[in-house]
Image 1 (tube, rainbow, N blue to C red):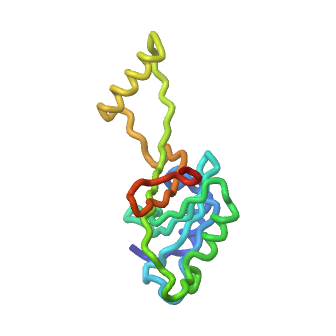
Image 2: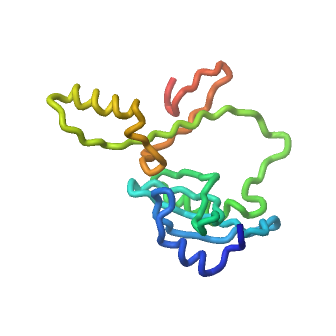
Image 3: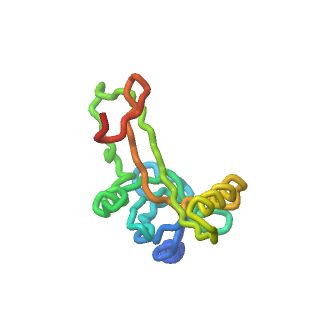
Length: 163
């Protein structure tokens, strides 16, 4: 990896990364800046879902993204995260107040596939068979939604608002 340049930042802004249009890009700041100048991307997919990712340039000079924070349609929250996620004190904790929690993350991928069939049941079977044969593989570009659910001590996850 190499250090990011102003030219890199200009090339990344407005591009598409993992199905998300890049609305903002910046170099990481703070006390512990990595020598390779990692940065952050603010992206939005065609469904209007926002994400902030940490990134670096891969061997092909393309952004390699990871450690995403997803915000659905909440642009203000995503923008706030984009602007502050690496600032010292951004994740301030009260000493002695931490506990362990299990949080289940459920990502939903969706893709509409058109097939010719004699009935809806046959169409569903054709797509199911092709999916099982790995002919229809869903990727991050097919991301539809994400849900975070606290897993109680008994181990049975309850979706937000559920009993």
